[in-house]
Length: 191
Picture (cartoon, rainbow, N blue to C red):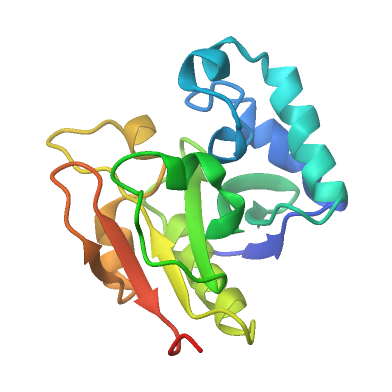
């Protein structure tokens, strides 16, 4: 896609982020699912406005990260990018328990591309920018991804990103799982 730029999620582009996430397929998540401290039943009862406010609060505290793919003033994609240690819900769930521990491990929590802009390189641009960003952090040792596998998955069921996206960028399998593998791009050796 021409004229696509990727920028860090910030207070300046938060409105564009929320407009993207207000659309179908997001259910008012605002990339808060892996941050949510309670169980899935409580999550399903959480109103979208609460998730939006929680995301904005984390952003103001510097406690959440992400990237936006912008086409003009329109956000056409987003990628949640967090230190894995910040995603308590992720590490509490099977099959992500007992993953190698190190504070330098970062996670691609979710990937969203606006309908009508899919299959045009938006997700790839976001992932490449995420790799560059994490690689620039001296303490980062790896970037992980958690794609969902299955036959005939709809786009909205691949909210953690399709496996093929990560494989094309050099991610390898860290942990096999029939439906929820863990992929990793090793950046440097852990200290």
